[in-house]
Length: 115
Length: 114
Image 1 (tube, rainbow over the protein chains, first blue to last red):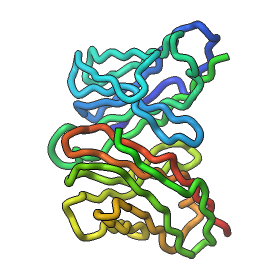
Image 2: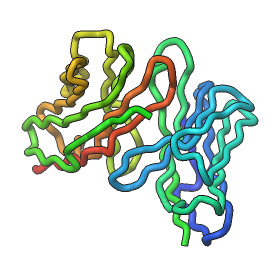
Image 3: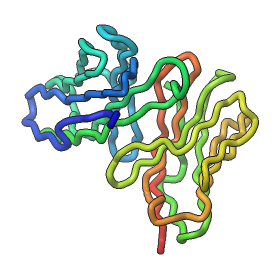
Image 4: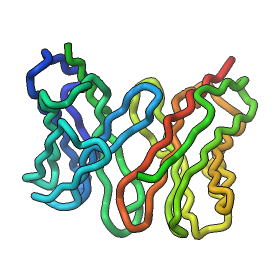
């Protein structure tokens, strides 16, 4: 079954600790994305990557970092510099060309709680 | 980021009835994509329907259809014959042809009454 996996589903951390959220896809998609979802605000783009070893900041990149060492993987690190890290985080991927390149496929998400 | 506005935080519909969700957006581009995504309680985002701005014909997918008014920058979603499984949060989203990023509205929660 092709798809996107995010782990863990729920993550708890103490304030001041960095935490890394996992995202893996086996859809052979070139592009991957990280979104943050807060109540009443929809999804906001944190970072995205179109090719391995390259990524761009989205609208709310401050306090976050990413890497793209493999096509299949796009981990997101929430650093201690992120002021309000508690949120639901969604990873997505898409083709860059061809049929259905307009569509982003989403993972099941990770709920991060920082206390 | 492009601005996408969903002015209805919540909508309620009787089973088998029709509900229409509103979405407006702000852009200076002439070609772009618009989408409606569904997020049920499981929180898995599912693409419901898409519309290419260059197409005048409104998109339809089974019980879901859109009313795309390009000049008014409006993109509403109509759910016909509502079913209990339609209960979810619905997000309107915009994507430029020159970019791969999606800009989302704040979402509308749809409740279906049995």
